[in-house]
Image 1 (tube, rainbow, N blue to C red):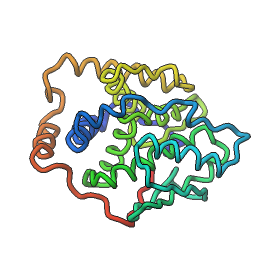
Image 2: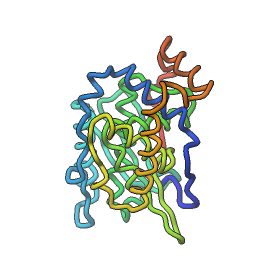
Image 3: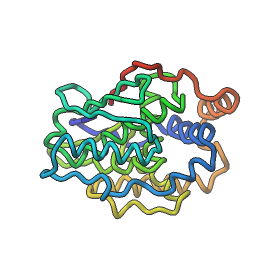
Image 4: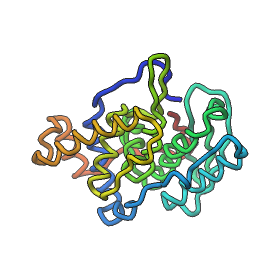
Length: 251
């Protein structure tokens, strides 16, 4: 899991999130993004405690590979004790090895969220699309996962009460909500019925407020100087520093 302590809130990564959405459209094209108009639905990634751990994880991974249109990619999922929630080694393919934290053995309903992020690493690797810097690249991955229809799982993995908290990914809950809201406004899809976490729903509502505010402002008004400069750079040259084969990405 990404965090067990206090969960960061607000929009500290907003410029990078917006740059990530722009980069997706530039690399994929508008028409290709439109092919992701339907999100992964809960029934396809459901994982109950009576399912076989390994067969269930492979089934969910296969569904996410199908959603991302990676027909020749084969994911091998295993579990081990480690610091991060999950990681994937980006080799030449078509076989990719994904490791999930042993804690998912007892938190099986969040396996789909962890796999959605790791399979997106494979997708972006094949697109040769990345941002410089590990943290920026992880924000790109979270944003792409959410905007292309599987990131509602990551937001739904967010739960917080007075005694404990849990969140997967590098975006804050509100940033996940913002990207999910941007997607909802584009595709006319309401994901709110899929949330099992009340905290996730609240974050989505807050994200929608900011997404609707974006629609009332001229392009790039809220991006700031750094955001406008990055946008101009990406327009000229495209994102840089693609991930290299054999690199292991963890979150």
